[in-house]
Image (cartoon, rainbow over all chains, first blue to last red; front, side, top):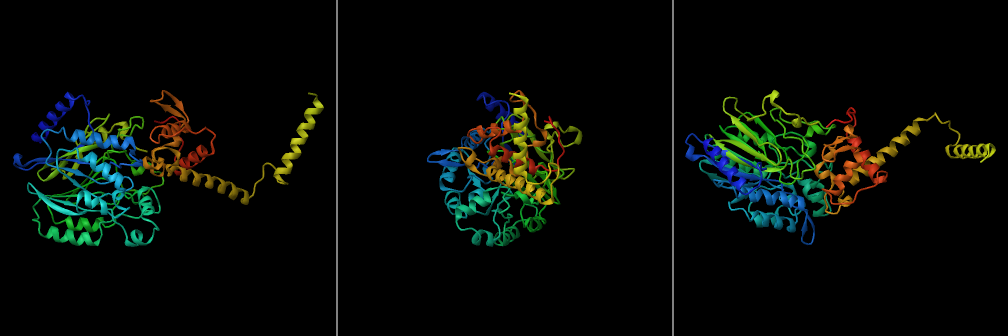
Length: 358
Length: 137
């Protein structure tokens, strides 16, 4: 924790020097171990939705979100060990959008790992994305932690291969969050098999951190805040002592604890999404544990967007959200209660009016 | 204008109204009428949904539904209300126009533009069942 607090103070000092203002929108993940020299942080940027208009013009608003997150990530002191990009770099999966997004990301001074989002995938099923960023799923070790990247936004073959006359239409149908012609996300059999064999080689005491685009839990099917085979993935992760799943897609703060698995979502750099309970017709299961982020102010275009730095503490993730125009949020694993909790707002009497969504 | 003239004009309008509505009386409607009214409304809702998810309202390809899936977080039941950023009480259509101008980088619609009517019909329909709370922030 000390490591993180120091880094945060240094970071804010640097940020202040550069007159970026007193708050910044990001989350940093910190992993801390019994021996503090093993602690490390990584940064998480997600859901940029770079959107091509025509020629060389792109939607300014979304461009600015990613450019700002990259610039601020570069200011972190000490440097994070790596950066995760959580998916949906593009809006409609085109080369123009992926190239433009990759160019903005290339300004990062830290190595980045990429997670596949549905907006990156459904035009060419990840072909061009793979050329830019590498395989769609893999694992790697870092300072004693086993990291896994999954492509969780696949769906039924029938929908992907037989339903749509053109790839462009398939992309458009999946891009509409509330489109009833869409299809539920899933990791799928091929990756589940791979995950099983990958985990078989991993010691059960090793902290495991999984990155996926969609939540590997079921929250609201109508907007794909959902992964169809989430239960099967959770079963594969169950034998491990410390498991964290970090996901994008939802453009809002969510966290949950299911058995040994902690779930944390990250912010989008592009725009915020409503919580499912604000759709009056929805049957939804937002985790009760989640204290929502503040309702967004549409007049401040970066409000309720951001990025995060993450501290890995004792193999558990602590997410540090610093939010434009809003007070910072820290969602930290409570080792006594064995669940992630907001450091300021977790108690019911600590809730503030902007956290009420309706 | 004489009294006689006014009466005859009123009589003419009476005849015209009778011709348009056929034989039914002003305060009577059938199940078929109700069905027709509902169909008219739902067609307008569908048109609104089409516009809500379409990039055509703006100039940069952004659609309303990108930030407001199922028109969530629009809260039509709270309008008219005070918008702190505009410093005055506004009806819903003014807020829709704010979105058309800003995130969509487009042109505002007239208050009685059929497209504006359709957008409001859709937004309100998605919010059906929620109690009216004018002025709520």
